[in-house]
Length: 263
Image (cartoon, rainbow, N blue to C red; front, side):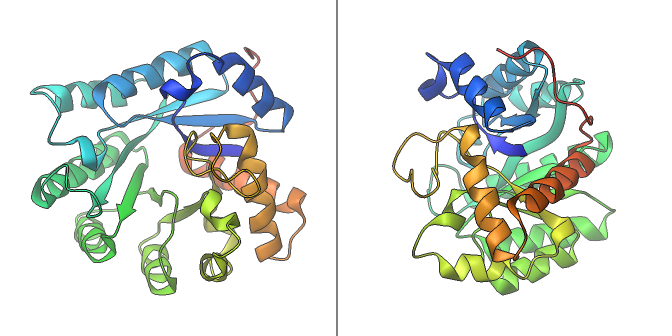
């Protein structure tokens, strides 16, 4: 398995990062992608990727933190994105649930991230919260400007949103919400996604899957989401593990052997 989206730099992990990663590898997690949300957390992601060979970094400025970014932060993100341990750009996108950053500023940075991903030939990671229409508008415009590769992180949209994202060539990554008892609607959507476009993630330390909902999430628990996705697609857990791992390796350009510098 590959946890394609988590935040290992979060304070919740500071005291026991080695133990958390040991549990992940014991659970069968081969690679972990840790995602930046600010310049500082993007720098921390690279530090972690340099420390642990099975960790890779994703760098960017989260839409909620765009307004708080300092002058020059974006230029530094552009430099960091070229680092060999960085496999993607993000997380970027649009968030209309919170009002930390005006939508026009979020849209500007969303486009910047996509253009950077195109220049570097690395995929981008999309955060979308209550902004389906606006996110699709940006994606469709950017698709007309040239091919891209990307993933909808912690996908929670409806069937129409899924279909439009798939038509644009996007991957859909499912997190712990897929496992929630009352989320049959999301499981129904997940069942419509072609096997070669599926990814799994934790978004740890957030969004812990059932039966651990409400607890601090961690990469080892990506197995619970993968097992749920297997049930949705009437596959064995092993088959879904193999499929989503293959998809992640293809999208993010990951190697085929897990790292040896374990904690």
